Amino acid sequence: MLTDVQAKNAKKADKPYKLADSGGLFLLVSTTGNRSWRMKYRFGGKEKLLTFGAYPDVSLIKARDERERAKAALREGRDPAVEKKQAAAARTLGSSNTFEACARAWFELNKPRWSAVHAGNVIDSMEADLFPAIGAMPVKDVTEALLLDALRKVEKRGAIETAHRLRQRASGVFAYAAAGGMRTGDPAAVVKSLLKPKPKAGKQPALTDLAECRQLIADVEAERASPITKLANRLIALTAVRSAVQRHCRWSELEGLDGPEPIWRVPPGTMKLALKLKDDVTFEHIVPLSRQAVEVIEAVRPLTGHLPFLFPNDRHAHRPMSENAVRALIIQLDLRLGAYRETHPAYFLSAV
Image (tube, rainbow, N blue to C red):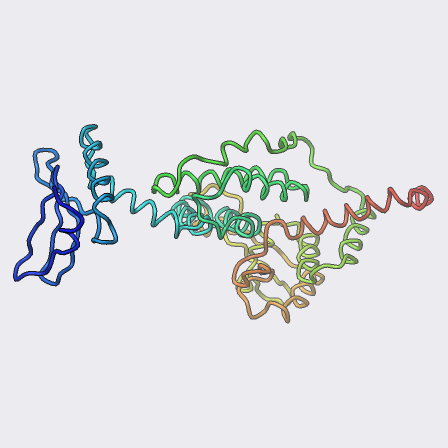
């Protein structure tokens, strides 16, 4: 058997040579004097070579420990060289792949099978609520508690449905990471039962009185908020389009704003259609624009006219506004008025 003194005193020679230990382990000495531990073994009827590292960084004792681990793998029918590569890949991926990097890779993988609107909703929701909380962390280090904490923040603002959707999307990211050897387990599956239950489907609350609708618009515009968000809310009221259509409105879709019949030509990809119809131009939707709607558009032009979207995202100017922007403004108003009702009930009784 080889001794540490022999390994330490091994000098370079004209040709590489080996100093044998036992069990297939040997020290290879190169012509430059570099020394590295190797192990010769057979697997599947073929002779193979395993490298444990350079001496003295890897000591004789550590090299023998590695040899015994390799032999244990061979006894169990596993190739130690393959396992070593897998472990190294897992370490590299685990330390360099953040949750955000994995989420974006998962998103790009699934994006082709989604509509443009849904794909935008998916990435926007993660950018708004998951990436700030856990995006910079290695995906292998994201725990159930960390994910739940991020989702609780979404619940606190009343977005219960969004919290459940985010959990589903996070689950897809963890499955993608697990398949790539970047982590094990799915924290999103564990926290599923810990989220607040989704509200039961029923009639959507709506204002049907014209005076109440006008008051809501006035109250929203009196709130301290972004003027772009306020104008987005006003355009919805004036055109009755879905919020997804409003968010994805591009300047290029507006025609004849200075003429007698201005229109908004909504592409089918933005509409709520079957995926196979979203590329069919015959399904585009024409929205006639009133004088007041054109005034809203012209009011927002100095703010966003140089960008693709009328209502861009606060964080990413070349992306559409978040799906929760206008909704959050109305929720903020409702919470404020609700608190005022509790502290000043006489005011509301007198108003009635």
